[in-house]
Image 1 (cartoon, rainbow, N blue to C red):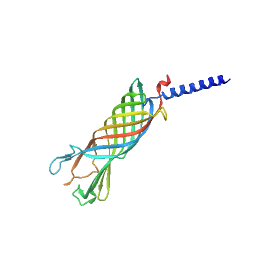
Image 2: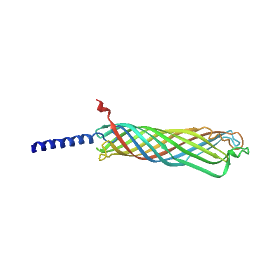
Image 3: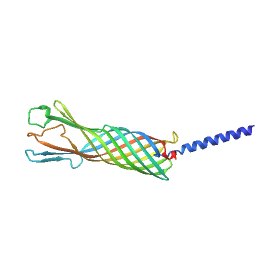
Length: 256
């Protein structure tokens, strides 16, 4: 009787170990359908260009050709995507979205007059730009350094919304600008098998290149000397660094 009990116990233990091993080997980092959440920081270099049309001194152009106005702030958002493990190689797609707080502010102790009238509301005392959100989509390729670690490279597109405010003596005027361009990034994912075989910690850094975007009127400001038209546009670049948790929970191959 004791031998039978020992055999039953041994079989139960082997079954448990085998099930745990199969479960633990279920998802490699980034494999299958995954979702995740992250926090991080973002920076941007904003390069404006303003061209005046038919001014007193003829057509004038002012632009930031080197450097620009720097933005910095915190981000918080999430990932969703799907990936295929092909031996040591990886192929997938990835989308992310983040609320953003990067901003810069330029101030002046004396209002800068943009109109010839005595309307002090037209004297600008500060200009603020803030990125409200950022969204992106990209293809990812990678290499499994080992069964628990994935190195990836990504490339795709991104878009952001910026809110530009020129604060005047008596009021403020807002202008919203949508801008986007190419993005490139590198990431490292490591599975937290001790906690859950589908859970990974993800580190990522991306570089954003912005296409040139028009700025309509920038508060409908008028140049000194009369009714002067303006053609304003903005471009630039930025970086994002994130750390977060990612969870894989479904593989389409399980349906076949």
